[in-house]
Each structure stands twice: as structure tokens, then as C-alpha cells.
Length: 114
Image (cartoon, rainbow, N blue to C red):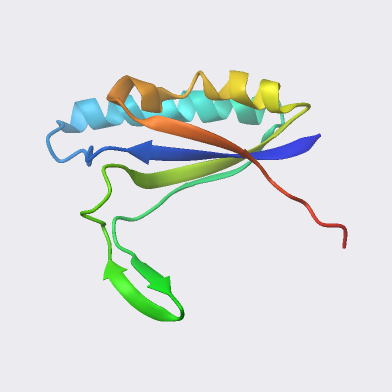
């Protein structure tokens, strides 16, 4: 099986305007979706990313995050296993990020022989 990274992108949706019940419901959707992938033994890992960061170029910090110049920010990722790119895309279609207007990028992970 090959490895694929799903990169989660959001547009300014930070959850501050949600009630605790709404936030819990969204988290349950994510847990159910990722749990379904894990139940098939195809989830390698998944993490949310914080809101702070720094962008470097030529070893120098050129901007602090979150980045005002971009419309979307990367909010997290998951690494999964699939037999093909097409299968990874199909699994991605069930992601709850779409319910909040976010996007998801699927990338193949290059694994170098050791």
C-alpha cells in the first residue's frame, strides 16, 4: 500500500463563534470519519495544527502567522494508506471539513528506500 497525506485547509473558521455543543458535534464527526479509516487499519496518523507559525526564506523569518495574505490556512493533516491515489481521494470525500466550507488536498507521500 502507498501512503497519502490529506492536508486540511480552512478559511478563517476558528470555532470561536460556536457553542460548546456545536464544537463537540463537529469533533464527533471528525472522530467518526478518522475512526472509520483507522478501523480499516489505513490511518497512519492525524494531527491538528496550531494557529501560530513563522514563514522563513533563506534562513530568515519573513512573516509571522497566521498569514493575513492568504485566504486559507492549513489546519491539520492525516496520513493514510491506500492501494491507489483514486482510493485515497474517495476516502477523502467523507471528510467533515467540507461541511464548514474547507478544502482538502490529497498528496502522495514519497517513501525513500532506507
